[in-house]
Length: 255
Image 1 (cartoon, helix red, strand yellow):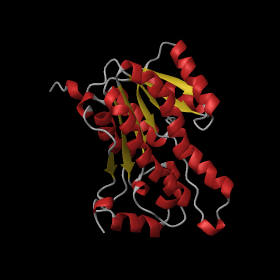
Image 2 (cartoon, rainbow, N blue to C red):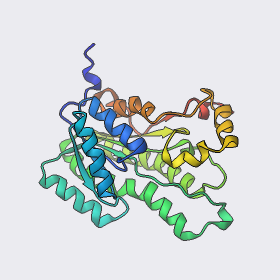
Image 3 (cartoon, rainbow, N blue to C red):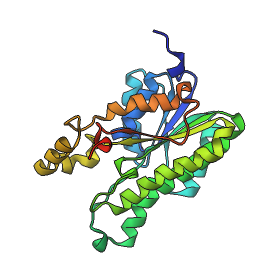
Image 4 (spheres, rainbow, N blue to C red):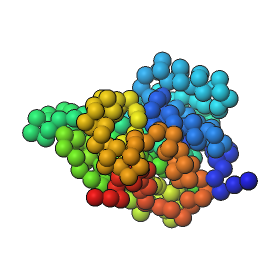
């Protein structure tokens, strides 16, 4: 079946934090839908290793190694992409970290580190992408939120604050950019089988809680974000703006 509404042929996607985990799964999925992808990370060796593996699978992939929390580095990275003739039409703000500590034991440096990586980076990278998308009257920004975009949980206050901010930042982007043909939306993953969650996956009590609390009775797989990502990157979502799609096995739908 020919489905042009979901085709990404001729488009270039930049996915931050994509040398592994959720970002890599999303990048691979966008490529399978026809996009040329640009991987991002700060570890150049890991980035090139991932890119080489994808090229070996026939994926059209480039790399852009820069720190998404460094404003000057972000600006410079987009200037290099411009010089290379890479027109970013799809941006996925995926880069993120976690830090678990009760609020009364949380120091401000680690609070700021999580906020900068999970929220401020999305502002910085989106701003530079939008500067190029808006004159073209076309573009897609996909921010990776979380269940914590609308819910709280003990010991992850900076992560919760950042992901809540992602939801409302996405709405602010939609308010400013929708009339110019640029759609901004978000994806809210539930508990996923990733390296960042490995300690929780290996904890029998927490593993049991996730499976008991989630209607699907299991953890999510990174590749299960691809459908939502392709939809939000494609013409199929041209009238979708400022929304967050939860891909969480139903956890946010029940009490």
